[in-house]
Image (cartoon, rainbow, N blue to C red):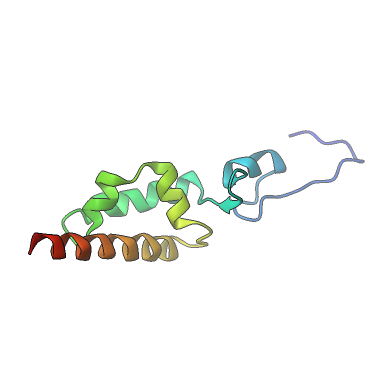
Length: 101
């Protein structure tokens, strides 16, 4: 993006890209911070790789990318994002197990 010397430069606090990209990182309707598409894709790959473990199948089958982005929220690392999604996956697995009884 070209800027002249009088224009200020703003960076997205999540991805470090320009202000124009910020709209993709923040859901202005709710004010909720959303995870980047790259982080969502990485968590989704983890979910597929662990489909049969700890409820990750629920993330694969029930969460669209925008829902997963909201669930991950402002996670700063892949490990943090996986932990957040994994917590939900385990909770969904526990609920399903109670219903199966």
